[in-house]
Length: 254
Length: 258
Image (cartoon, rainbow over all chains, first blue to last red; front, side, top):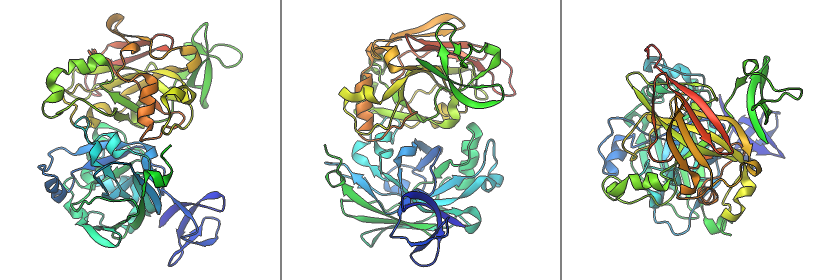
């Protein structure tokens, strides 16, 4: 099963696919996917994000592949849904997308071994973990000003149940900017895979249902400008659409 | 007014006013005795910490801020997250990791947000602050601030918070509060929020310039230089003038003895 959360006709609903371009709301109504406001498919609790977790991307950024995962956290306010706008601040030089497989934890996990890790997974979704490199500083890098900005983590469209994704470590990822292919990879190239990460995190902290692990991005980053439509897509999981807005256009300049 | 979150009498966790005379939760009829309730973490939102926001903490870095890997002193506020699994109540036990002898005790004033704060003006910051609480930002000691310290700062229970939230009006000027850390009753650290690089209102403005804070979230004003170390068996008290005195213990790793 795959589920979305949408706002329609004055209420927030759960929804499921109902054929090409249509959704079936939990109350039975079938509506066009253009007629709803898409929300993140869940409200994440603790969100872990991996940096430099694809061998090719680590090479692209001129770092050697890490021996320990580079992990940072995100707060719940960074997320927005499918088909929303992400703000590019005024005057920045380099704001790039990152197509990432998001793993959603389904039950309390403490001291889990990799061999059992998938038992604790509820499902998967797509994240676009934007970064604004102008704001990078060498303290707790990458810091929240780079990675935890309002609107800068689109998530969705669907939360896809684990059983619909039989091999999450072998999924094609791709990003297009205005229809042009810019990023391509496969989850098999992760340095630290999903079972390893669940064992690692649960070795020193308790994971709970609703926690999310953003598993990192492959090579192929590019700058994005206001008006650009960014589509991050993962085989069998979803196709997440986002549009960049200028701070002025978004109405955020006072 | 002070407000605590407690569990009592088999009823779900609820917020209770704190009786000023006894400093215990007040159930409407009387103050509850220490054996009649359990303290809960004083807040339910997300806790965001601020690195190097005390003048002395930055000064203690010396010239290293200009050398590798840092290359320059911090420009924006440097934040980190104490996630939900780290929240712990007044009176809780914080367990050492296996093979570790000491934990660093980061005393912090917790700014409790009262309503959604996005791109606020420093001059209006008070409108967004519900009150203040005391936070023990516990870390496995780590020398480098270059990479996020999730393994060091985000272990279960590493963020005792409370005992209560003191309303903004009652706490007075948040940039003029004495902070004291005692371990087993002995004073180990004393500082003052007058030493913040970004005072409370400015910090809120600079943080909400790029990320919203929600009602119930807590922003830590910073941890002073010389954070004391605690060992298994130690009792830690952090007292912030006009806000409260938070107490917790440090205990041996599960399966190890002190």
